Image (cartoon, rainbow, N blue to C red; front, top):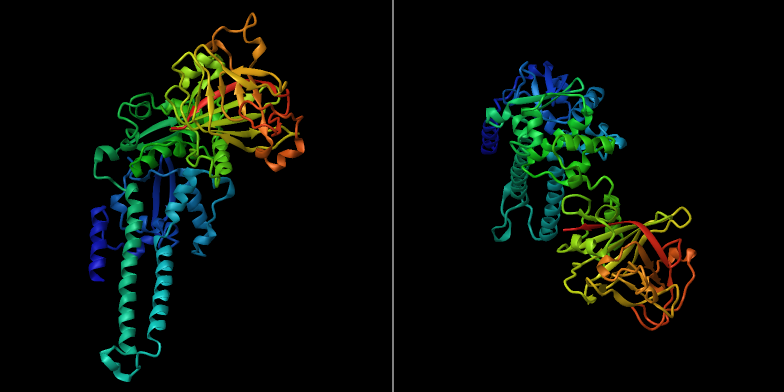
Length: 542
């Protein structure tokens, strides 16, 4: 036990800690600079919940290890809203001294900077460990009791039973020793976890990295260490906002800047790169448009981390896809959880042109893909998940062993149903000159349509076969526009809840992708089998 205690004391000294603080220091009033906001609190309030990271941080042993500002205030690279709210809760509930009294408000539970710091500072690493140890020890005692019942002779005075086995008295001492030793090791592990949690909030030992820089945003100070400022690159726009440019800003709201600084600070403390999860999680209740503007001003690519502002694909759509595909043997299990990072838009028809040539050049080399499109007039939203590349290298059409999945992401007020539609493992792709031919025209079952892309359920750039060579029709497939589509749902694949809005049906002929005798229905609520789309986007998923 002495060795355990000495190891912990040595670790604290390495972090700048000092021997046990005097009990009298609990009455101290501490002055803080919390990422630029000045604040004051009594030490006893900060240490009210024993065993927490917060209580250790401000117990007095680490006062010399804090970074200080020019006025000797303790500097904390913490999201100020979270810290100030937490201290106010501690003031209110200081008499109860119970962590159960501190509950994050529902409006803040999706606010990553807020929840991260409240949960970290109020965490007690010993709680789960102790509960786990208690359960394991009880289980061990039960096993020992089951195995020894009727076999160990209990004798007074700590004598041994037959065969030299220890008596019950000796067993009790051994068990007690195990409990004491185990408890000591668990206490050590819990304290080491607390030390690991407070370490990023103390001096690093590099005075240059620990020095403070600030900007004035609409009259409010936002402060961070040089280490955090340079964490996104020493000559990055983010660093230069604090180190080189005019420190006064009236062009962005201070809340956005504080959130962006906290995102960078937490990534720096963890030694990780920024991710879309970090940046999206920091939005909180902030206005997304203003937040995007602030990201751009401070050198973070908003499209990279949040997805394009005008994008059809949203994080909630990917989460829906994951939910609908979960448990399906034929559905992909690697759909990313959010837009941003690897999920990037590579094509937008209204910007990059509707022609087949522009589309296949944009998506070349990318796999898997999500095509997402909006139906003109009805505003319905559909997606096609394609598990392989769309490659066009020849003039002629071709059929590929590529699995595709169709999903409906948004319905209408009268037809609100959304979900997984179905899949196929073949996909027809036009060449540069020749279109895909012999595709069923569901509006006239005895005729065909041509197209340039035919994944499951939807066919793009359709043209009745009889009109393929009419005056005005593009001579080459590469010049076809993707606006006109055909959609169908095979009866066997149709979700039961969609049947209450079944559309007119036909029996397809014995050619094409749909088997003879199967009925098909409209997935789109308007425009018949053929409909126009007013936007089409392609996203790479990896």
